[in-house]
Length: 212
Image 1 (cartoon, helix red, strand yellow):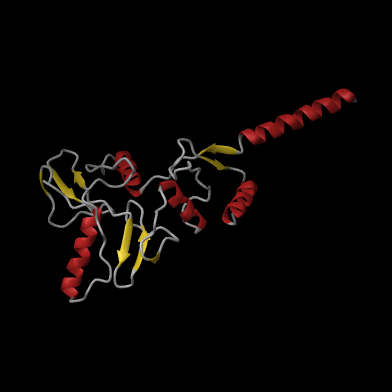
Image 2: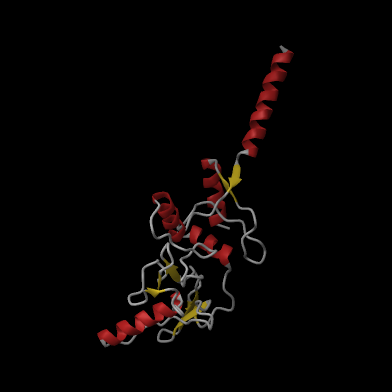
């Protein structure tokens, strides 16, 4: 009898240990639209395979498989009209510059004043802080120019959250993966990301995380 109890106790312990081991798993970042289109093009052996930047976004210059022609694209990978030419274009507008140009062109065509114009850095990237001078409001944006939740205010924010903190804010507003990212003290992503695979624990963690 004692032996049987000892065996069952050992099995219970093994179950608990295995549950703790498999409660977490390494979290792979979801593929971006460029990466998804690239995988699809490879699978179908298409003539054009999108070229993606290191962060998974579209490169501003895209070229055909044979390299005979290239063109500029916007942030969604759509070809910029009139940009296709033999070889690589001398220069393409950045996504920030392209958005600014499109807004100015639309304002000119419709004879209306633009309420907001994107502010771009010398490199062409979006300035971390964007402002609407008419409303006297400013806010932080991510690398793609998307407003970061909770940063809009009167005047300029003293500091903007970094990439991991931005994803954290999106999660709290119901956008993206439900598993909270693990951030380093400086707001960047930790090298290894883990997420709960146990549904009950994940819900409890999400509630605790949301109200802290």
